[in-house]
Length: 117
Length: 114
Image (cartoon, rainbow over all chains, first blue to last red):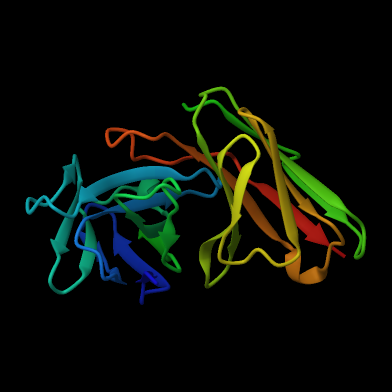
């Protein structure tokens, strides 16, 4: 069975600085998707970034980028130039690529990020 | 924003009473999911559906049942609510194509069992 682990329950960053959130996962499959979701106090789940396992290039979305290390099964999220609006719970998630059971997501425990002005 | 609506948004109920949460989508997506969110556990899959009347269990299905009689509606029922089912419940939807890998989430339902 696949598992996702986020070992940092809480992180803090100064506004305009850079922070990295860690995520490790375990799977026996070679092709899959990895995601980072943001959950602000409104509870809405917002997709931040997506990585396809067969792509070696790390995904980037504006100030958000990932460091995808497939052999190490590591998928960290880097937030550059942190803003007050980045304060939220962040979840790492895994999804099998091929499945007749749809896109079930396996989530990590979450990392609560606070941003200090 | 994806058209997915959960109702109710908040509910307080007594132990032993039945509770039904509703998820409604306007995207015509094939797959629908119910997750629960608890501190220290992230989101965990309760049940999912891969078509009308086609459902299967997830990781934490005990005490829950689901039904999907129409593409757009996915109901989650707690037959006899317990305090351990106090949680935030999320419905999600996703499509079938490789180009459509993203899951879209509803706003969540906060359920308190007293």
